[in-house]
Amino acid sequence: MNGRPLNYCTIQVNYKKAIKKADLPYSGTHILRHGMATLARKVGGGLDAVVAMTGHKDYKLADHYSKLDSEYQRELSEKIMGVMREKEKVDVSEFGNVIELRK
Image (cartoon, rainbow, N blue to C red; front, side):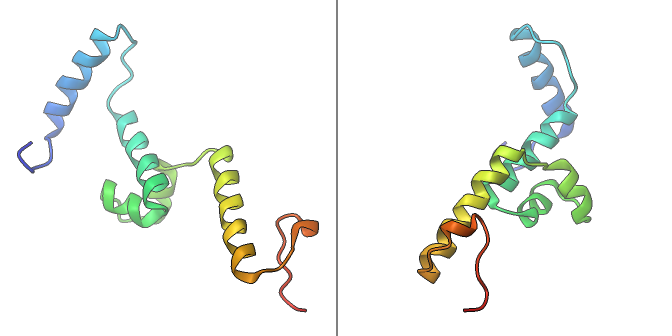
């Protein structure tokens, strides 16, 4: 609020009110940390973004909090392959997702 982070009690109170208003079962605010870490990883593109968002010091823990589903990982892999194919101007379609390193 006013450019400052919300304190934990404010988050809890507002979360509980929203859950009750939506008539959903209460699950605790800890899931918000996982959700925010996952969004940071998707938008920021890596564990550095998760570490910055969550304040974790350990990349292993940041990875745990920001697991990406297999569909997102597949889409990301395809995007990377597209960029690599464009840069290399090599037709690697017959190799699937393998790039020839030597000619």
